[in-house]
Image (cartoon, rainbow, N blue to C red):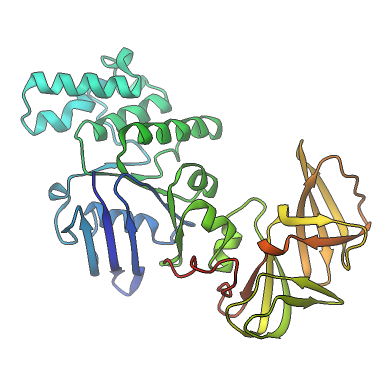
Length: 365
């Protein structure tokens, strides 16, 4: 398997820019997620790595070799599509072994590779069945088997679970991650589902409007978002943003929200103008003595927790609290935030201000 290095790749289709200059590194053996909304450029980026699209500019390195202008056949990369792309006139056995047979591999070796892959995927009992009558999960396993059997340097997966129903999709996500861990293969996986990315990925690139917004581990992306877009896109419910106007000095540790003062991680840069205090719902506490206050608009019971929607002087926000706490619609309650988890944003640029919280994390993309 191999490391993949992306350096300033850009893709234009006429006047339309699908991917602006993007750079990141996919480590050898990593399960790497390209995450973002539809049209953000994640699939185009994947297709450029695989060779299905050639970059307008920039460089792509696979195992130390520059491959940006090579055709797919010279990249030793396997691609798994969302719609499986199986050959309907072939049974499972022939679908999986087709890449090896087309390369002229001796039958004995082909059968040995087939047996190995079938055992890994648990499909020994369906090898002679036609693919047309298979369930969605089995069809996905066959598509994976056809990719795995080649022993490629890397796997590219374009929303491979998108056609499955929600319950089975979660099960297959667990299977895919377990399969990756057994094989240690470098895998690049495209998804628009942030829960899928957080569940499966070692590293995540979050893209929006053709730009890499942030690059890091799932925990870095969640706890230390680099932009308001990332903070809003990741998490359910997403991060709350409380708007305020202020002039903050380098080193500031407190901000004024209405009549209350809130502690924040020490700033590493000054800022002024329209700002936003970002806080995750689970980092908000309801307290009788809280100086910052909000009015309960709704409460959604979720079993062990509840999501409480509140109206505050700086905007609406949601708090995730214990299900045993009694709150009533219309009640005015005190609110407090876990100081070390708060992120401040410049609303004009959308970027997070550098602070003791995110020092050393921002700027990966």
